[in-house]
Length: 161
Image 1 (cartoon, rainbow, N blue to C red):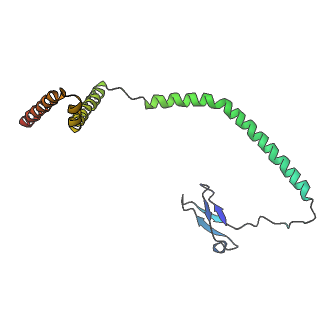
Image 2: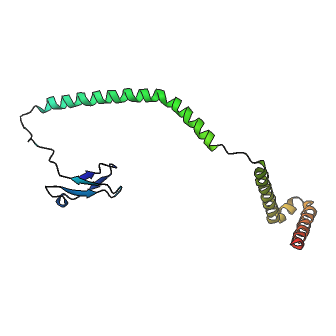
Image 3: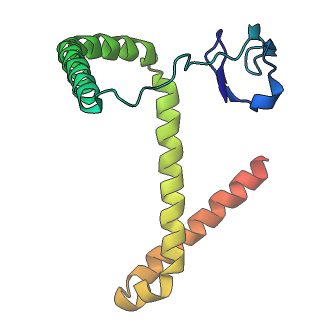
């Protein structure tokens, strides 16, 4: 059987044999709420076979259609309200998310991206040095000077440390 906690509405599947006819105290595993539970027989009266089943079905169909109509009306009303609520929520979220702009950190971020891009370009040129020199013979002197300059900068930084 499935038992629902009256405090937090968490549902638990419990074996019928664990609950005596007199009932017993149960404790919710989610919220630790303790309550007395007694098995109630929901079918107090037996079903009659001579009832007109088609008439019951028609009545239930009418009730279901009526509930669906009420539900669809409620949805239409919610749709009218939703755009206004969405605008208010988006304004509140944008106010919360807005961070003070710090131009100093933006400058250093851009500087780091620039340095990494230059290093990547130099590594790419070093990797493709031979094919580039075959296509552009005058590039050999420029690449040689670039590598010598980088070597001098490297030695200068090492001397500073």
